[in-house]
Length: 263
Image (cartoon, rainbow, N blue to C red; front, side, top):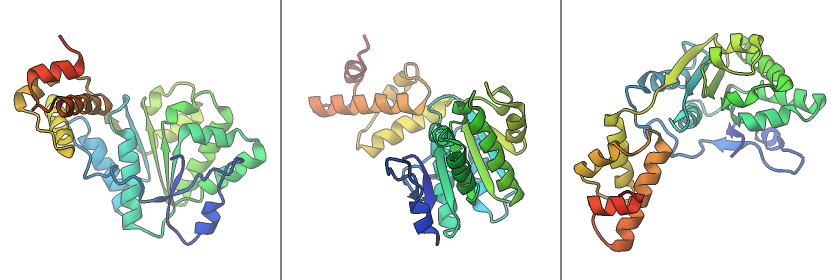
């Protein structure tokens, strides 16, 4: 998925936003229902970010129109960004919502001035603009200029713009000062590494999702060995589930060690 949009009366116009190979760039929100607020396990380190994300898409006139979510890899930034799009689409079905990975954004802004300006104007026509992994804009001067234009246009019209990045706006490497100043205008929320209690919740939930019962003592064991990011936790549970299925055994310490290749 590269670019998503909510259903709107301008569907035909939206469907025409394609690249030179004819690949569709706009898809309908709601999209990827697994990315919802209900499906996001909240920790103390993410509570403020989740609350900020919910507020920006729940009200017709949100308390802030720009939100910047930042944190390390695999902590749920993309999940929250798409959850904002899904929630906004549900609450305001006539609004146009765009989700753009920054890598795709940069590609579209490097197609030459005429094409870049056209793409930027289309994006600036959204009601809610969601840009993922804004760090990738580092050193891309034209893309930064176009994002500056999009940001100013959306804010002037009272629309919503949300970013995710690994670094806070003040530490965004390779970004021009005029852009970072805009990124600091709205609400900024950090997503911190997952704590023990939340990691245990995620382990149990992922196990339940595949019908796997993980005893508490195994969860405690995993807490000392699993990296604190969602993908690592999911990979761990998937490997244990596969081992349990292949050996037709319940989850035990011996089976867990075998599944994870631990001594």
